[in-house]
Amino acid sequence: MGNTDTPAEGQKNGTFGVEGIHRITVAGAGTMGHSMAQRFAQYGYQVTLWNHRQPTLDRAREAIAQDTQNLVDQGDLAAADRDALLARIAYTTDASAFAECDLLVENIVENLDQKLAFYREATPLVPAGAIVATNTSGLSINRLATAVADPSRFLGMHWFNPPALIPLIEIIRNDATRDDVAQAVFDLSLAIGKKPALVQRDVPGFAANRIQLAVLREACDLVSRGVISADGIDAVMKYGLGFRWAVLGPLETVDFGGLDTFDHIAEYLMPDLCDSHDVPALLHDHYEAGELGVKTGRGFHDYAGDKAALATAERDRKLLAVYHALYGEKDGAVE
Image (cartoon, rainbow, N blue to C red; front, top):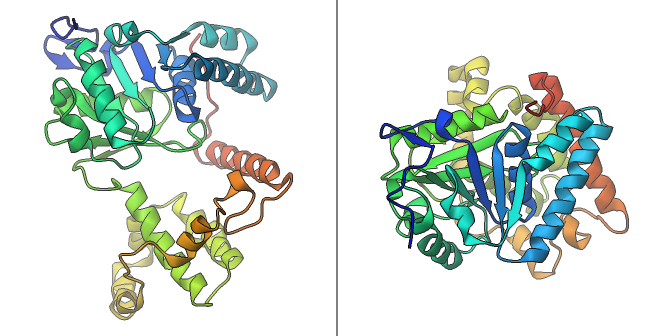
């Protein structure tokens, strides 16, 4: 039995809008899932965090408690607001969470078959007037939509890690996504202090990961050919391109630099850029060697001993400083 004939708050007079979203269910309580739940609750939404394993929920509850205490300690959140935030989050393994929401955000394991199975089981329970979103990093939104009860209310809502610090949310339509559904999730992203970008067509990797992998391909090629070191390529991005791209997008950068200038550069440089369709050998060699980055103590760089914890803390400190410097905002809870 489902609730597909019962309108949710999300849809009023047949139209979806952000003003109808009050109750949000987040499915999947891992790092991304519990961070989403915290963010929604911080901005006044009633949140149910669902997971099929109780131990995962217990760890999520502990993580949210610690993360919010850190905000209090940093002066970014009042103690009373923290208490109110925590009270707005419920934790459950019960599928009834899907029947009592205006928005369901799926954040389970990044596996196509498991996501399809989840949607077949869960979305018939979701009220007809509720929106369904996925936080997949790159799986086809159109393919996932085939398992959703009413794909016109389904779309991608792609957050970036660490979700508490990266402002961007990509909103990705499937071929059947209604305009008002996309607009409602866009407006919701703004309402929780995020910076959304609407991806109008479902393509592999959406927009951000396509750009990221194009840069990674050229970076790996330059390092592999001995043109520059791994430290050097990171310096080029951190202190040059990335520093500028935090303020201006790539097309805005061209506008400021002059389209004539970039047209001339592209004419001689494009033929020399790496255009391989294979996984970069430098990346794959590290993968085969079990050097997976911070989580294993080594990747392109060394993170042995306490270096991983120190690098993570330094990354987060700098991201927070950049966010405050650029946008002049501190996260605030709804009183």
